[in-house]
Length: 586
Image 1 (tube, rainbow, N blue to C red):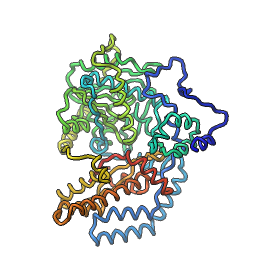
Image 2: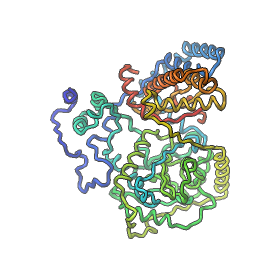
Image 3: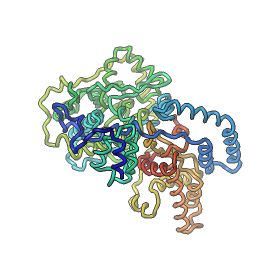
Image 4: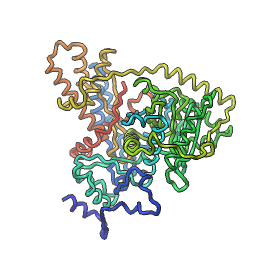
């Protein structure tokens, strides 16, 4: 049945076989340069992805009022209802009409894409803490591979393999499989690759597979956020072949791709990194990296001074580098230290504007810290998972590998910046602000060992809903009230989707939190379980609506710093729900 439906979409005369895609058949092709050799082109589904729907105004208002209900007393809520009704029947109707019209005029993208970039790029707050997140790798399962030089080499080579695989259209498309026995198979892939891109999404839909938007992926590499007055810019130079390495506040660059676009040998990369690690230079008196933690307008002004002071070429090398590798000179003590170091560090050994910093501590502990304007967690998480898998399962070097016998003093360029008094003053001021801000950040953790997601699933409870309920209970216990809360949910099932807001604080979580915190003795265990079940059911509903882009709030609506057919919606929400980024703000 599926094969028959797909056949109707094929261009006539095409034949297919089990071999590798024809785009690979070039002279000198080396499979070892790539992570994957997907027979389905990476962007095969992009053209036919469904568009993000504009929610109905009345639905948005209804959901808004539901989110306000647990936060307001009766009088405040009635007043809010009146204001919402006035908005719906007045200016809201005209604004919604304009939004729908604008959406129809821009069918190549989503209605939130432009405003989303504006939200991030016009924000003038420092991007550290306010925007940039991190993801920490597990240690390499083979302990001897966690040596800093070995792991840095393997992660770097795997990251560049990812780059090459992506640009060669050989990376497996990002697809959520509801029935992998049918859709995640070689047979299906051989069929679907011949369906035109304009129809390919529908072919995947027939077998309960849901391709996700991959439009952000090109910004992973050779990209930087440039500070500009009022609104920053995203810069990408995909012709650059060099890696940027930071160590002790010093900047180094060397090529990781040769003139033909092939990855430089792993032993050469290892030799260059060993050379950098052996540099005994003292840390600079005025570490330039502090400037990337500044207010964006201040940084924009100081950057212009850097350019006019003869640093344009050096800055260009920083901006265009494939990515930024940060080599730290100390081991990680514990999870609190890890979180502080990967989230902000001491400000000297990160370039916070780069699309991502790959951070590797002295003991091999590694993380990806990324700038948020260009993309969301889905793209970074795919990169993160693929690089970890490749670097641990197919490492480029071993602890016994010898670095190449090459003159790294010639291949590695150490960047020097000319700093006048105004720039030195600016760096000192940035350092002072950075240090003061980081002192205000407290991080702690508790590892709960008495049960996890598998136990909760057996109780028919959503693990995420229980985590969110825990946040609500903690806030009620500490502050005595329920407040507006934000959780991010990906809308990557749609073309140019970004994220949508889940509002975990509800009348159900408020009732349950107060029962547990204030009057647990008044309720039986069964009653408390029923309350948790209602919280879980409602949270699942909110997640589905957010994944379908139905909430109409937009992530920025709550940021302190800065459906189509229901059956389709139900299936999409299942497809996308696992990709939400479980971060909450209260």
